[in-house]
Length: 84
Image (cartoon, rainbow, N blue to C red; front, side, top):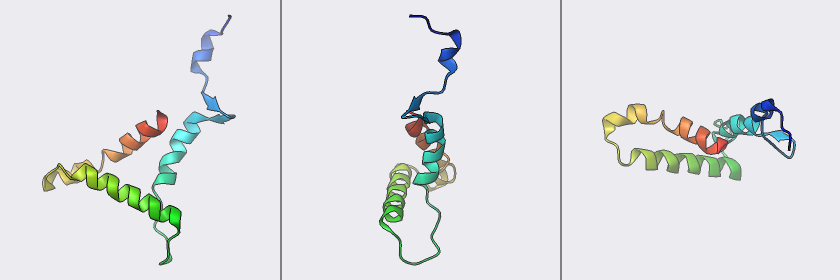
């Protein structure tokens, strides 16, 4: 089987969609913008619940002083989860 040396640099795709685009777009989908209305839809409610539970579990074992830098951890974590 002959494969080009440059095939290793090709972007992996699934159903014609480059997976790197999905990996970059998924964090924006997971972190919603606050709505301008009082009533939320189900998607925003689930996203907000997920984010609150995630940060609560992250902050639980840390003391109050560590809360300043601890919010920097979810962004690389979500990025790595979406890439894998």
